[in-house]
Image 1 (cartoon, rainbow, N blue to C red):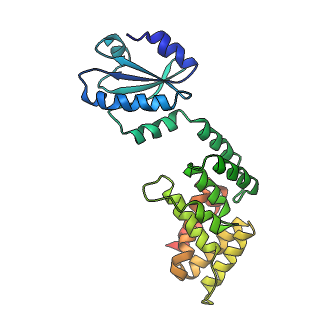
Image 2 (image 1 turned 45 degrees about the vertical axis):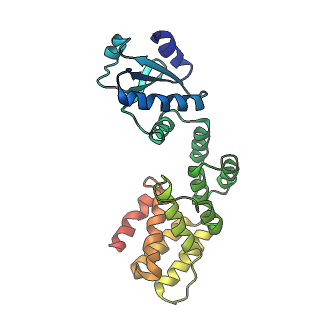
Image 3 (image 1 turned 180 degrees about the vertical axis):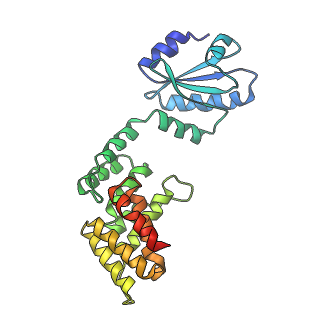
Length: 262
């Protein structure tokens, strides 16, 4: 029997507590239980796992409105902050945990990215290089580094992303970075107006004048969006996506780009 007050409520003021509400007759519970136990053993520094048998402690099931099992609730400072139901696969549980109980690694990366000043940000590049060296399996960090490097060292940026495949959460961002790498290596062999504008956009981005690079990409798209295997269109879309919806340059120029695009 679990002493819920001591093992969950009081403990959750010291460390997050994951409570697995289960029962011996529940098939999905028998699937989920060992997965949670293994993950908990691997993450003892992040949270504590407590298992509550709803057959033995129906009052707790009623108190926490357990309508079906397995039901997993996350307690922080005495309160339920999130939950999920059903026998989720291991990767889904790990993702859920990362979203709700950030690891020290994830928190460190979040703080690094929050310090971003410009795109590219050369000071941040060096910090991200160090972080990636310390955490070589962190794809989010590699994409963040490549996002800044692509304007200065496109080959190195692409090399960071070679292992990222469809299905990876970072796939779309990696594709956008590869598109911009193609722009940064672009050489004008046609002499067309759109190609000349693409070269100028490339040079502006190399000089870290992102606003001018955007304006020139808009001009290139207006001149011939299909030029050079649609590079003006693709590069414009990629650049806006890497900047993000809330970036001041996206807010200023995205509408104009869409107007020439369509």
